[in-house]
Image (cartoon, rainbow, N blue to C red):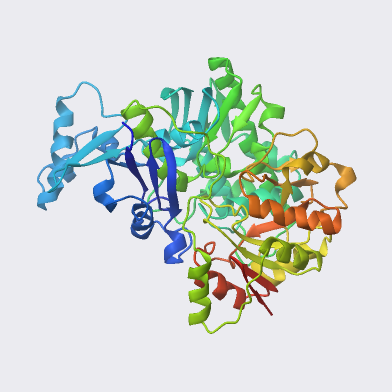
Length: 567
């Protein structure tokens, strides 16, 4: 089965994406938003697919299978004559016939469905993978563990909102699911909307705001009563929520508003009440996840854990897993959210449906487009910009950072996932708390209470975070040792924590050399690292995107490959 190419597609989800997997190893992956410049687009990932196919000889003809990270056949398991009694359009037979045949089956459709379209050269085979199986495959098959307990949690996927499983070798065995609408992801999303933010978009604003509130006060006790934990499952009191109703103007019900007060308007000042609601939402979420993980450990007896689904973008909880649950080790990929299900679906087809061996564990997320120095030079020439070549861009950037400059850093292949890890980054000196406001005011225009993250040399990681395991994907928020707070104050949240990225020479030699250069000048082996984008824009993909962002913001320096622009 050598040379097996599988194209993974995540479409009409919170972030559409595509991925190319060869023999179980990710070769290319990108979110559609990076090409269309429409943040969090759900559109069919045509341009992301074109990028992935550009890495394969013969394009789509060189692909052996296609894997999609949702399985619409789940909705065909119960006959429904309203939709499938008679096809109005000939292609509707592709779902009308399976839906009518469901009446003859003893068991409903489950797992994956396969569609085969005959083309001129060879069949085009499409596997539709159950959404939470795709999350589980992303979590487990990218991990370094030969066997592990698996938990996925998100808003919803087909008919469920969470899945527990055991991964072993190239196999995934489901233990149980939590049915929709009892959703921890949508519970947290409903609170996000109640606080004046956007559901399915701004949940990390609530996570950041939570540190300012009372996590154990009256609001928490009242909110905790709305979620029941029992026997390894979750039940949400649906009398207080309306996210499962269509149409519904609000994700919370009138009963919720009567109990907790009026929702915050998006333009309204944040008060201590709002901070307490955020803190309570975070606390209840953590309670629920602790319950699920304790039950999963009891069921499996395994010490290794992998997690996936958009709920595990919650880095605050991720950082507490090994200290507050029975699991000894945890793996979170760079893309546990919906964008990562393109990888997950492809890996599920490779490992589970085809029974092939797993590929290597994820050690980086640099799967996106890259642009060599010649391509960058052509863009600069077309824009009539003078940008001198330099011998060592890492040294130039380190020098600028030490002088207090805010640097746009554009190198190598674009990251896959929602966090920039040193190839499409905005960088700054972490040694002054005031730098956080400078970056915010000059470029990011974010709420002042949202923290920035440090990129830390692996060799210096223990200096700031003690004996914690490495965090290569900024996936965990961790306490910063109090004696080092004064060294990186621009990256420390109000509660004394930070969301670090551990940087190694093996994963990203140029970025590692940059931070080493900064350490040589300042004695601090960490820098402030945030994604290279303006507010409400996707992370930059191309040199054109980087140049446009540079001149549209207060960035001081832009290092594009080996070329440097300054203001």
